[in-house]
Image 1 (cartoon, one colour):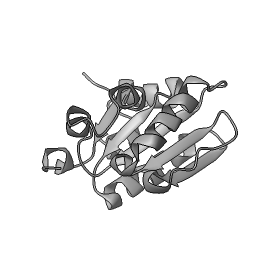
Image 2 (cartoon, rainbow, N blue to C red; image 1 turned 180 degrees about the vertical axis):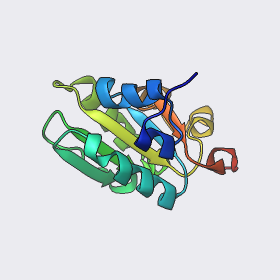
Image 3 (tube, rainbow, N blue to C red; image 1 turned 30 degrees about the horizontal axis):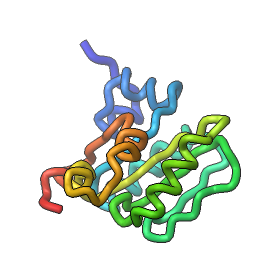
Length: 139
């Protein structure tokens, strides 16, 4: 029998996944519409650690500070040069920064096409949460 918490049940997350998000703070990849992602980010916002920095992947601004939570919207809009910068930054982060990445479609097809760095994909995609049928939509 799986246990659910009030906020977790709203997001259809099992206790184990919710506990991981709250305690372990893995990097998360949310796949869904902008409205759905926004709703989930607002719901989870109280569990994010400060400082919270948000950026759009198309105009990626990497925070100078370490720690906290870094939200990157629309992952597939990130240029290859910015992907390399982010990968370097992720490798040099201490204390740990939780990275929350969003996309309106599955990112792995972009990896397969060589448009998105595979190593960055696996760093950002520690836990994937698909919010609607967006992952099935062709990219």
